[in-house]
Image (cartoon, rainbow, N blue to C red; front, side):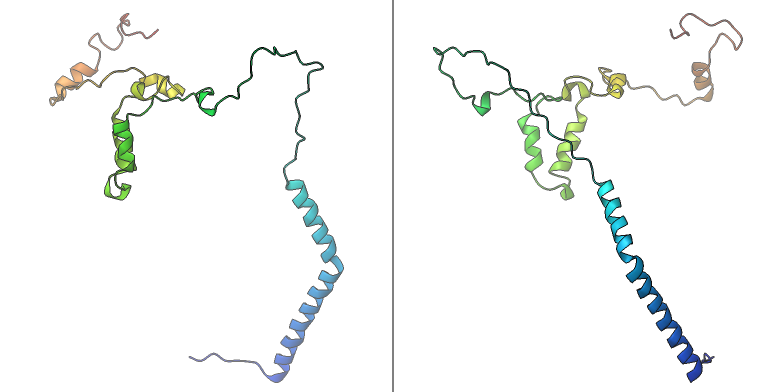
Length: 176
């Protein structure tokens, strides 16, 4: 099935004129309004820039206190500055060495280091609970192994209360 082209010379000239007319209209509009559009775009771009606040310099004291001349001033060494406060305990050198041993793709390197670190309890890794979610499991201790109950009646008896549905609550059942 071939496509029929109803394009004779007259129709072809019509579409050529139509195309040229649209291009001329576009050029006229751009010549007339293009500079205004660019000015608006620049104004919007400058409005979007973050404000640059002036830097405030500390006010100098009117008269600095006189320094004692008997004590020679020493330049503070970079090693004796205040230590950086960390939220975590330092990592043992043997565990830190795992970082540099192999690559993660081979389940070594960072992968092995992180899995080893994960096995430690949070109390051994962190100095204090960092988030409120840490407080739920903080110093919880090792998990207790529970026996699996295979019998349905045993599960039912241990799960539901034995004092009945409408019985008064026991003092041990209340969480206050």
